[in-house]
Image 1 (spheres, rainbow, N blue to C red):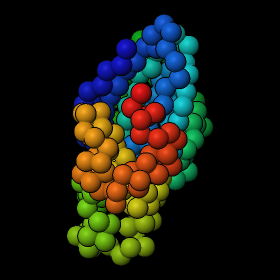
Image 2 (image 1 turned 90 degrees about the vertical axis):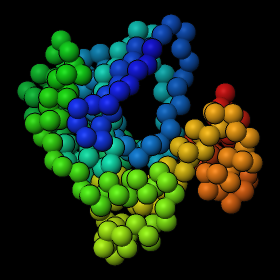
Image 3 (image 1 turned 60 degrees about the vertical axis):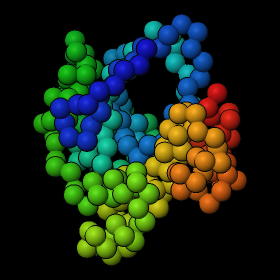
Image 4 (image 1 turned 30 degrees about the horizontal axis):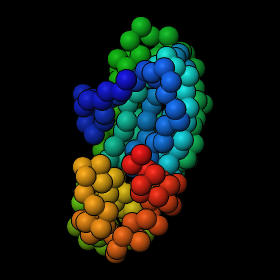
Length: 221
């Protein structure tokens, strides 16, 4: 069972899951976000991924989490996203142990996570909100930098801090997300490659292998 909904915090999605009996390995695609996750009484940070993560959890495992979009996670964690990219980090390595223990032992862990994040909340960087939106729409990086009044180097540095990687990698990840959404809606791969912004279907296949670890047909299965 998995469900998600908009959190009261801007640019944040709340989600909850319970692993059902007989569940196999799950492939989690990169999405330009980092997550703050409670799992059966432990709390950790799932940093931004550059490639898909494949995990297997025991039946009955419970998760409650917040997914931070638009580069909002680092302000709450107190560390740049590039320090946790492709990592799973215990939250008590970043926050005081007593504060993490209160979340871990809470009767409603999602409410406790939300309250803790709200106490540490910092408003999103407008340039990073613009970058995230542009990446979802496939707007070129140079256009984003010009609109935000930033040099390419400034945009790179702020993107590394907010998302864990530069704007070009963020664009590749968001293009993959668009392609997967179109493919799951039943669009043929040739049409998906054109609509999502790939040069051709071979380009789509190469990028899916690189970022998701499997070709398109295997990913949709």
